[in-house]
Length: 211
Image: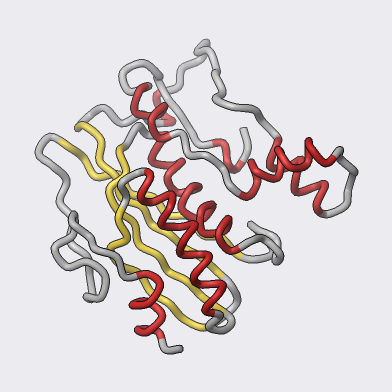
């Protein structure tokens, strides 16, 4: 299957925020008056960021979730994203499941795919997300002050616990492993929480890389 056939079959969706949508050389975005554009990119590489046997639907979810978490950390509302995808070969079943996981999360956050690229190579996923935040209200890491309280949403270490168990560094009871693996392979981006913390939190960060 060629690049354009793959895009049209699995990744072509209507885009209302970009006049061009998927298929042109560039996408066009304009934040609403009084808003600033928030942009973030994350790359996932097989063997480093995810295990080879991860379900493609979960991988599609995770690839977007880690990017949405960056928007959440600055209090932004998701708008759109681009997807650059390297595949070792065109596996239609894999692409179908991956795109289902990707778009399920995208639709839950009203975030549209507006462009990207595909090529042949080791499995690599790079997503760039775009969001908007009221001018001057983004939550920045630089806002932290000595003496601030530190709060964490959720629990720390679950994803690493699952990774260590899957790599057989230690054993976990099946219910504990299932819960930890959910945090590793299908994390929940705290988008609504990030927006609620605008004007309350002095700073924020996404802890997917650790605290």
